[in-house]
Amino acid sequence: MKAETFLSDDYRPAEDEPFMNERQLEYFRRKLLNWKDDLLSDSRDTIESLQGNTRNIPDVADRASEETDRALELRTRDRQRKLVAKIDAALRRIDEGEYGYCEVTGEPISLKRLDARPIATMSLEAQERHERREKVHRDD
Image 1 (cartoon, rainbow, N blue to C red):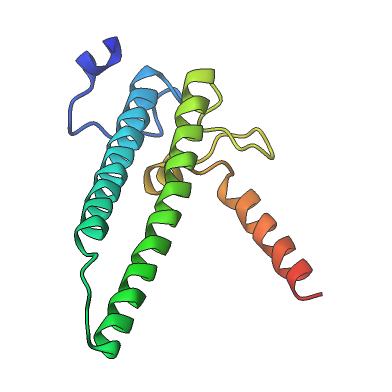
Image 2: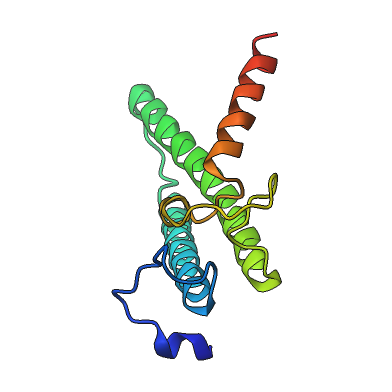
């Protein structure tokens, strides 16, 4: 990746540079890839842990506690699997030149929002409108 050569570890996207220039795109690509690597590493650790913990526990309460822990861990991994899919979608948007733009309005998503939530697909305003509409329909 040629862009990596001019991106230092202390680089932060700034509002006064062209939106989604090469440096910004590479910054977000790296951020997304590092996040994905962390999630996949955690998943591998969980799989190894679950495979290693198939022991027979005679005490019913201890066994129930372990099953609850296991179910919680699997739910967490499922959420992380969905997150990896969102990260992959964000990486695709970078490749396609669509990253950083609201899928509803087409306007740029703020750099602060993208830095905090690099998988964001909507501007803060569009996200808030979407959540208000969802809440109204849920209350019906």
